Image 1: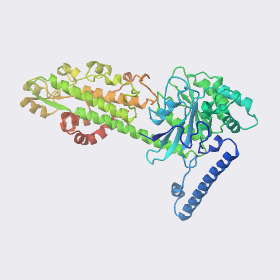
Image 2: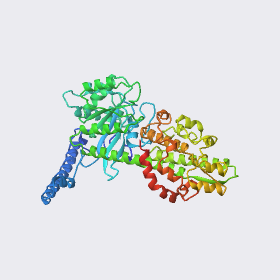
Image 3: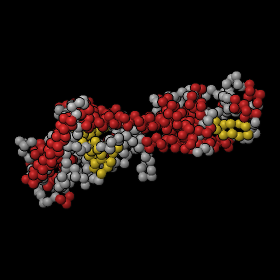
Image 4: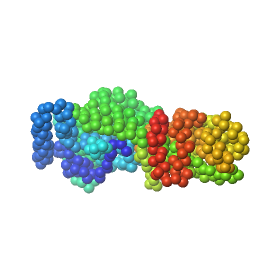
Length: 550
């Protein structure tokens, strides 16, 4: 869906240096991750020389294009000119940092539309290594943003004390951080050498090393937490990296959110740009605000503007695809018809029709889940609790819960729970009574009169049930569009049923559904070839999908 992404192996990429600082990061501020030793300084100079030569070549190419295109507009010339991003032609490197257990990985799952990215647990220090994922342009395949999930900052206050005791305050922040990274306490594990200081800040070192190698960072805040000193120390240390840092509030849907207190503290630290992004109660506009606010912090925001444009396109296209899936399902059910003889017991056929509709609805629900990348398998429980959407559509109490009433008359009342349009399209009434019902609109077409003459009774799904199926399909789609990929089966689902609004009255079915009821060849449930039936429904499905948009 939407803007594509890709995971890469943790701790092995050239631009991800997580442990000993030996692998060389790449990017605008890559040299900051190195100690200021001679070998590393030389390497940084080489890196800059290469990028400078690339920029010179790009400039010469741009000038040549301009000289050869004197008759074209400047807009046309600029479109063909080579573009470079902040990261010198690479994806923008964005580090996701914050205190442990604030939901960094959860936010990444929702941004990536990937419920399997990383590991999420309700305990500290779940993420132990830096992991990277790429967001690419879904149309061109161009890598736009590299997102880095970092371990949680566990003891920033202790690290701040060490920095104040062991680094010179006159040195700039980057130099002080580099001095920390060169110390044994930043290595941890087997890489530590003998030292009189037994403190271990290897996890903080992984975060700082990645921040120094990144172009920007977002600082994830659990909005439910009070403003404490340890968070102030985290922000102070991150500010020394000399890159734009934007606070992002997670869990904003909670009643315990303390956003105003946080904003006051952030403002005192010159962090005036922040945004809200709940990884469970997802709002697409919040994601757009996140990218837009990040773009305002860059002198060259073109790559983020491209991402914003593409994500908006993809989100709208996804909605179009989802409404077509629902429309196609409704047409398939509306065209579903079974014929029985006048003297036959209808109940076995009615039960078969019901089960066919149930299975078709479940298949449609699965399509919607897959479209929005909420996958379900034996390994991971579905993040969306489908209980309210799995209730039997032929339960008469469900019609009442949705406030859908039938106007089919007393004859249909006996079969209302079965969802069969008995009053409109064939009952056990005699031919004379059926003919007399024409004036009251009980018979929808002359074909049913012919059926009566030949002793055939046709059974269809009634308008009230079609309306119910349409309403709760829309409710499911709405729920998916407001569900973050960090949600789990235990995460609450918003109660949409009370807010449900039927797209039409049962007595006023859309023309496409009315037409489908006279086209049994459209339905794969009747035993027709499913692909041919779908092709027959295609135009009607597109038109009906326009009427399903909320």
